Length: 307
Image 1 (cartoon, helix red, strand yellow):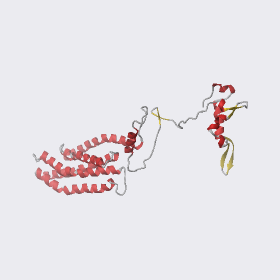
Image 2: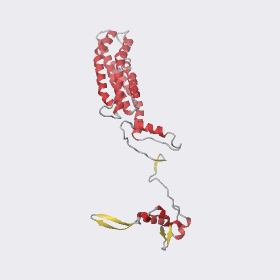
Image 3: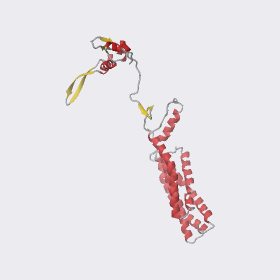
Image 4: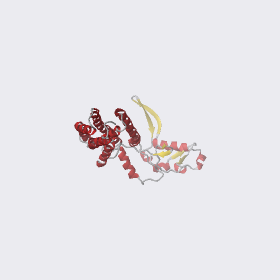
């Protein structure tokens, strides 16, 4: 509402105009009464037909000496739309849009990526879009995972080095990890699943399973060598004796994870990717544990009965 400069000449202020308009549209409390144990305000309000924006210019504003003046002589009325709340983030105006997932088959991270791709180029250069909520938390956790995972691998190596009293044998045990990770990632690609936090957790859990299989095999080879068995014979006997436990452990793990991975009995958007990475990583690492690891052990230690 824009007021002329000469408004003060008739002893009126912008506050007088706003009060008069508020009384005209919202009414004025004149008294109150009690209904039972509750106090109820009684307001005097204009009829609905007079509480219209078109009638606003004819609304009478009374001066201090009692003379009615139409609003059209005192101010110019414009109808505009303004936000009820102006929020700022890092000193910039911001608008927050929040929503909840209605489809359990899609993850927040995948949905945010799809939304950003759809909005690309649809807004001006002075507008920026920041994704928050669960998608932001997932991105932050995945960034931290890239730092924690190598640290965990280093920790596993030193633990195995102390246990085997060797610097080479821990590398043999952990040689299965790259193959298992590749199998896990390929499982996500084949099933068209995006990489997510829970998928990475499945990869981390899978590394523990496959390392355990390699550890069991190499530990048995070392036991046979301590009994005086030749390297090649120890490798062969250990591979044969540990074939059934390793295969059964991996197959039972995969069989238990398949219903969750494929949503048999109910789909879970979080546990599904984790089951895929854990199950297929364990399954396709079996040939590496049973063939590649014994072959590498025989290659490195066949020339000597001791390290």
